[in-house]
Image (tube, rainbow, N blue to C red; front, side, top):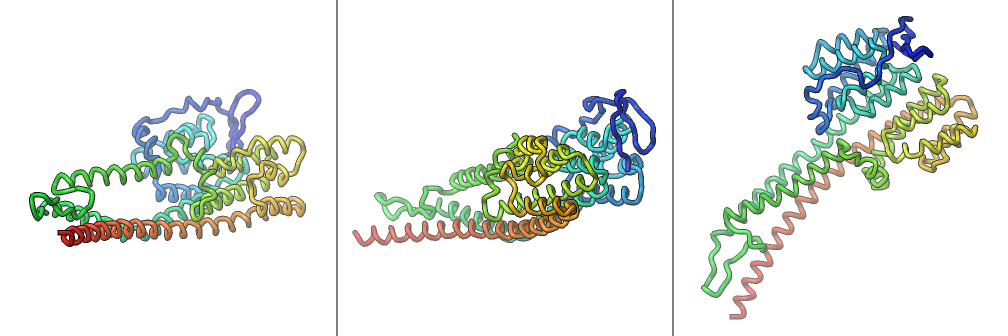
Length: 386
């Protein structure tokens, strides 16, 4: 594993190779602009590619392959953008950048969370371990996405059929004629949509609603306008959704703390990097307070508890680990527990999402049936008055 540090003379020194090269500023790393504007909107690597990339690096580093050699191999395979990124990362590391620094220079190609975790791994000296953990993490996300799609596929098809039925009703409604000159035409929809014009208006309105929901959901997923800063503290208390966010963040926090404590990294840096590794705005807001507590000589447990953001269970494990001298091992076990909880929460979310779509279909069909029923009852009521 290639670890580096900066000497007092401004040189970036490679600890493995024992040679120094001029330190470069982060902004000087060359990079291709091809496709970056798209990445800014839709993101970079897919979950499948992220899992494979992390697993390749974990396997390679565990086998003793140099990072430069791994990046050279990466630059020969994959899409043109991936090959370009791998080559520029390799060039950046040759110029003195760390691996996380080189990843950061690639725009939105790599998720910020992965970069933070890799940076923590560099500080702790366990880069191969974090790549393996992130490979498992992205694998779990990919599995959860597949479960979600399998849960909602049939409901979505049913929803499409329901829209088709309503469209047919609106079109047929255009052929309904009034019984006499003074009567209004029978309205199947109850809202006055008729014929081809009514179909167009219905689909325009439906498309606008569905498009807005999909666009908002995609924007939240990709953290447009840094929306996670506001939304994450809100959704963490929502049933089904909240446990996914909380357990995933605590699993990352446990894993990073375990690695950095085991490597003997200084306390202040350990706290900052571990909290940043959560990728959760709710927990990162407590960094300053925790750092102040560390500076006052407080223990890790006391410093983490000071902002009042972490659960008591987590603080107790840290405290017991510090007292017993097995904090790294205790946190590693706790990380595995939270990963299992996060996986179960993701499965529950997939099931809930499928049920939500079913309820939406049921609501649409019930409204349509009762609308027709009331229209028919109105016809009979008016006929009885004659």
